Length: 206
Image (cartoon, rainbow, N blue to C red):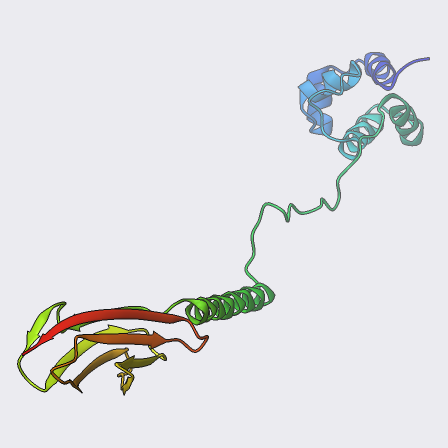
C-alpha cells in the first residue's frame, strides 16, 4: 500500500517534474515537498495546512484531490488542535470591584475586632496609677498638700476617700486637706470592671 508521499513522488517522476519546478508551480517550499514525499511530518504545519499543500501538489500532478486527501488522512494522524485555548486565569491577577468590597469589609471587621479587643483588655486590666507629687516621706508644712499624677482614663480615683477629678487623659492635679495626724495619702484607682490599683505615699506633717 503506497503512502501519500510515494504516490506524489511517483506522479512527479512520471510527469518529469523536478522539485524545483514543482516548487515554482505550487509556491510550496522545496524542503516541505521533500518532507511530504518522505512522509516526514516533523517540522511541518498542522494537518489542515498539509492538506492544502497536498491539494496544490495533486492539482499540479493531475491527481484526484479527494483520493490523495483520503490517503493523507490515513498516513497523517490528525493532531488535536486547540481552537479556543483555556486562558490561564490563575497566573493573572485582576483587581475587581467585588474584591475591593471584600477587602474593605475585611479591614472594617479587623478594625472593629481590634478596637473591641483593646477595650476589653482595658476593661479587665487593673488601672495604671502614677504619682508625681508628693514624694514619699516629703515634709509638709501646710494644712493642704498638692497632689498630682496620672491614671487610666474612665476610672474612679480617691485620695484618702476624697473623690478626685480627672481630665480627658487621666491626669489629676489638686490639693488635699490634711491635719498634723495625717501620716500618709492613700491613692485608690477603681476601673469600671471593679479592678483596683492602690498606692500609699507617706508624708511628714510639721
